[in-house]
Length: 111
Length: 112
Image (cartoon, rainbow over all chains, first blue to last red; front, top):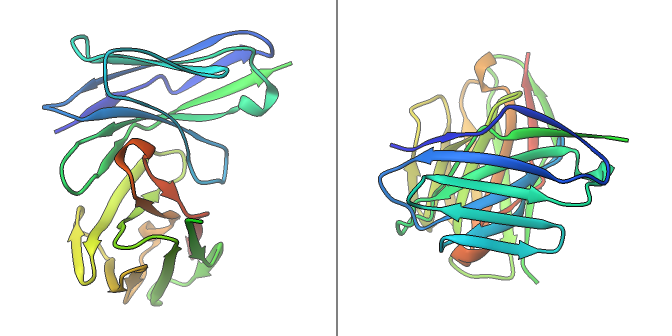
């Protein structure tokens, strides 16, 4: 089966940088997603890593290391609107395209 | 354009009552469709998925069922709701794997 671990909560200051870590155990997967979910809303897509390394997209970057079973999401120049849950998600890569969601990290950005 | 519609947004139902949640997509053909549930403060749990009309796969034994009567319609049902069925229900589709899922706006179900 799959197991995804993320910190439950994190707090950071507006304008700062925060790194949200994700470790996983799985027998195989195609890629790893990061989603953002504001309270009471549906998750929205942030990034998708297939290869090892860093993918940068504006203020958000995501990193994957398959050999270490590790990923992180890096948020720069934090804004108050970044307060949300961040979900680490595995793409099992079979024909059903089922995604396996971690429980998420709740990030609180303070002024 | 590709859009996904899910309704209702909120629902309060008594224990033992039936349930029907509907999800429809526009702008694509033969999408993979999914129903997820998120209990308060928890992660998303996959309930059902469908790769085509009439094709339903269940991930978790439970009090719910799903149907796909048309290519772009996915329905989640229950004959008799339990208190434990309360949660945030999300319909999702995937067209291209690298784009991940697009979610509907969700239905918050409270069983009382």
